[in-house]
Length: 214
Image 1 (cartoon, rainbow, N blue to C red):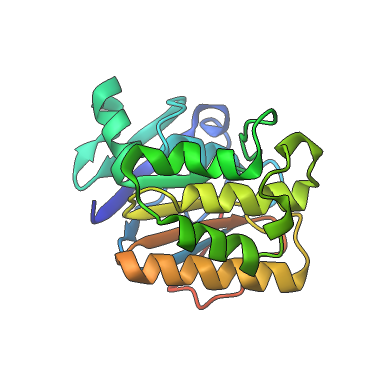
Image 2: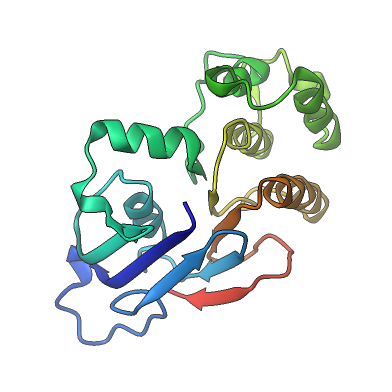
């Protein structure tokens, strides 16, 4: 996938509002593979809705969202499975980890689908992110910040052309946010992938090609 385009997209719940001031809602927007985007938003402005629309989890919007010119509203289950398996990866705000599994198992459950990363690479991420001692710990017993780092590693354990990051550093201190940013940039650069990151405050400290206000 090379391009994600939005044409006059707006959540149904906002469709009748006359006071929308947004770089995204009701505007023409193009996200290009290989570039980095920050979507800044106030709480309640539709940040997570945007991510859900792009990931195909929700369709309660007006307008058109296209992947390389194909209207995603026409995608069937099989097409979405292929997109989420090979073209689009997402770090969810609510993480969606399996609490009964260990941190290592949560990462490997995704990695085993395509064998995207070697065990040694994943081990190096655990080390770099300061949670090597938590590999065998059940996620339910980890802090939210530790879980956020596990969820990031899982998101990087698949092929992708675009990486969606919904408030990726909301529960991390500055140092861990920097370490996470380094790993994301390395992986995105290696794959030539685009990054679309959202924020309602703190954000990944990287050079963005474009900053959009939601």
